[in-house]
Image 1: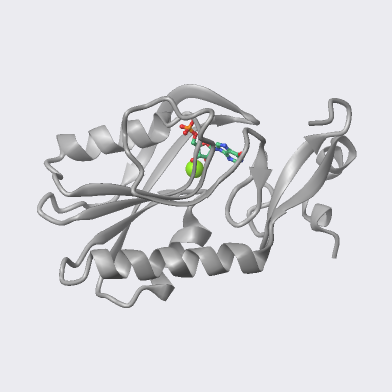
Image 2 (image 1 turned 30 degrees about the vertical axis):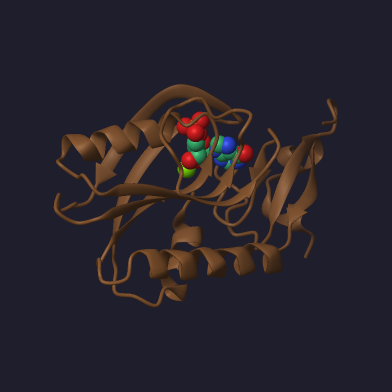
Length: 188
Ligand code: IMP
Ligand code: MG
């Protein structure tokens, strides 16, 4: 199967997909992150807070490689329209977060940081004091908030990527590797 087969015709016609990270690279790095988090949080019984939709694959692999007790909660946020951050975060739901527990926010990608900042502030307003952030990807040139990210899988250039949970217009989340989307008319 060509990786583009999962996209509708319109997208296939307008974009090329360039492999950025292989499945092996991603899975290997996620295992390292799990090992690190398991070491850092031993005896602490943390909550992994999965930021839907994009982080569902990362969070699932992260959780399954962890070697310590932990629980999983979910929040659904959105800020993107197509390939642009709207700058405004919408919260659709947040499952129960006990304030006394350590929380690890699990994000697919930190772009401007707007989403992470929103969520960190929201959790603090609920009384959470032990809080950190884990993200599979980060675009360092775009990041413009103060929130520190404790665990970063890969720093990438400011390009739009899909796969391993990340989507374009809702498509491409099931791809096992991470691909850069290149507009055929504009190039990179
Ligand atoms: P931020 O609030 O600007 O940091 O954007 C973060 C959110 O935008 C992520 O949780 C993703 O859902 C989405 N996003 C940012 N960059 C990309 C990308 O390259 N591909 C797919 N989604 C992205
Ligand atoms: Mg997301």
